[in-house]
Length: 474
Image (cartoon, rainbow, N blue to C red; front, top):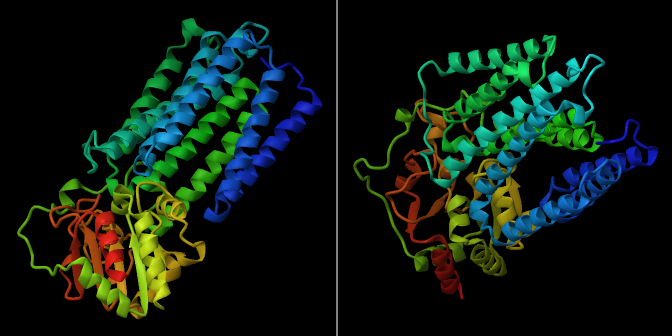
């Protein structure tokens, strides 16, 4: 445990670590500075970790060293091997670990409060510590179970469609009220040790339940917001446990993660025309029956070849590329950049349009394009480029669907209704790369863009199709 009064140098070290974490968030706000941001974050965590170990009475430093080494090896291995297409699942899985860690810390403090220095003169857990434990355990449990459901939806272990329980809002509100009431009851209990702590366990299990209930009604189209929100929850859970552990670094780090995640979620909700409150309540999933399945009668469409696309691309003056998850699955970003380079060499203006929720997590497409060394000044967000589709010759859609679906503007029964989408229907020509006409987007909705007069469907693996276009451009 930390000494009763932490030395001044330790508080200064935690402050420096906090500054590094702030610089890390600042760096991560742009792909151009993201590497520097990561380095700042790593340096801050190293300072915080070393300071914590030095200022605590550690029972067995060898065991902690082994645990840190094993964790580092696992993290390094996963980071090297994980595909970008599986990154959202990995993030959800890591969030669940943070949440469970917060629950375990709270349980450890509950079972052995003396070791945490949170007992009063009568031998009972301090009231303020009970509140910290209950909140930390509750937020951590919500983060864990919610992240597990998010992982299962993203990984295909369960349907990405919204799962609507009867009276779900009443159930969620009742469970939330029970958690709040339980926290108050636990804080006011005269004796709150392991023998009298049934209220604590009730809070924990109720929180596990509400995490599950909050996420299952949310459909796949809204999953990027879920990932962002769970990231915020994990930060607040860590901050709450920082108070229990009397660890300044955890409080600072948790507050930064929690607040930045909440701000990002709010920005994404505005970009999708969703209510921030409804996200927290798990209430913006739309009835799965409203999603149009892709198995209906086939409508007529125009198809083309790589040679056709290459010829028209060469004749264009302006091309806007809209990447989506299909590009990530096919790992087509490098071929796409090569195609763009050839077009620019022929005098064609090329830009990339990135939707706030393209892919399966915030910034997914930006990372892929940065990996392929796409110039940052060619990448634009929705509000900055949407007005340009009316002046562009070709809208080149590769692996995207929901973010270009006009049903978001016209069909009130659609699960993506109200979400701002790219106005690709205003472009003179639309090229749409997808594997087959049988598939629909993650929201499960057919797309009228497939059947427009100016649309040419390029049905193939995204990487293979772009590579063939590149060859035809030579």
